[in-house]
Image (tube, rainbow, N blue to C red; front, top):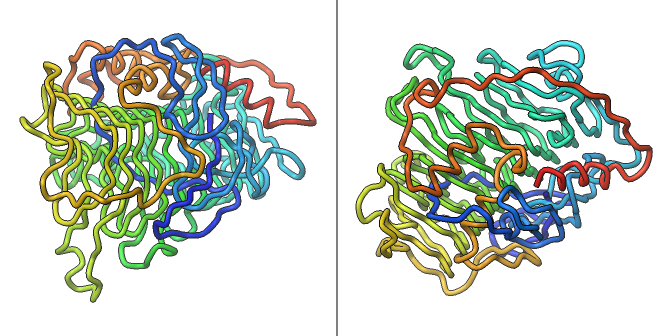
Amino acid sequence: MIFAACSNGSDGGTGSATSGATTSSSAGGDGGGSASTTSAGGDGGSSASTTSAGGDGGSSASTTSAGGDGGSSASTTSAGGDGGSSASTTSAGGGGSGPAEGETAVLKVTSLAADGPGSLREALATPGPRVIVFEVGGVIDLNKARLDITEPFVTIAGQTAPSPGITLIRGGMRVRTHDVRIQHLRFRMGDAGAAPASGFEPDVTTDGASAYNIVVDHCSVAWGVDENLSVSGPRFDGPDGTSRRVTLSNNIIAEGLVESVHEKGSHSMGTLVHDYCTDVTVVGNLYAHNNERNPWYKGFATGTIANNVVYNPGKWAMRLGPVVKEWESSGITPEPPRVSIVGNYMRYGVNTKPGLPMVGTNSLGSAYLEDNIAVDALGAAAPIASPDIVVLPEKPVWPDGFVALPATSVVDSVLAHAGARPRDRDEVDLRIIADVVSGSGMFVNSQEEVGGYPTAEPTSRPLVVPTEDIEGWLKRFADDLE
């Protein structure tokens, strides 16, 4: 579940957000770890109330996802509807819209078509505070056309869909507005048969100065051609000119495509937190089979990376630092990101560079480090941080009220609770979880190497929306799945 957290971080940031989330663009490491899959720990561990019912792996769960770093207000407890601005969502970091009461419209998705009457695209384009629920389940084929979210105060409550839930294929999503909460969706982007360097580079990302107070929680994102799931915007416009107060919590972020159709050639990226993106919380996620950016925080970025599992990273696991040459003509001297990295677990896989540290830097990197575990494929200790990381004496940013799980509990917790619909996982998520448990699997170049795009028979059932306590109603759907 989501839940809002007010971070107290001194991080750069943005001020209090009425219900906001935290901007996050990590690129998660895949790594996972051996693991038993049955733990129950809270989803990403973090503050807050959320009482989800233990994920697949049994156990119950008091997951508390991680509050947003920067600012964000919130009391949130659940998947709440978007409604206004205040806040009530329990997931990571602040988030998204406010409680789904009052003048909040409830919009029903009744079609799996990519657009038109009853579609998700139509509901996203509708102005005003709204909660989007689903009377249908199955696959939405975007046919290479991205979904843009430009109207604020919206909750996408994928947990309300009948089994098998909602899977979006052959396209991504861009969030260009504020107070947004996205839960329990699967994104299977892939190359869609595009020609190399053709411009088809789908990802799920936030973008621009209006992108703040955003939570992406319990989603499954795979086969991105650019990143899988990121926080982004202009490089030189400062912390108020780009994404901020974003939380990525309890997601599976996996199998970024390597030798695919990206214009730069070889790619495979988990999460990028772009320059100046502040108050970005990355908590309780599984990063698996991404070559880099698990996640990568660039210049001036701030946030918290807590209770994530990174399995089979390649060249980089967690990366910190600006690309200095990108700033040469700006007149601005780039500064290192400042990040709290606590309670994470990394395990090597077949594609991992020997000796890879959990935390590295390409230029200037600084972080507070506490209770992290890194092991190679045989379980022997691996480096936590490269020698050129500046280790900070105290947390530069931390979500208010967030208590991280111990790193020894993180693998079981994340494998039980991460991703869309943990009690109703699809074949892709089940395969990725099995890779982490067995220490198997490898990078992929196309979705066709691992079974191709998913298919599912469409399902439907009517929803009776209550006139009161929509927040509680949405939370019950989520609890049944988590």
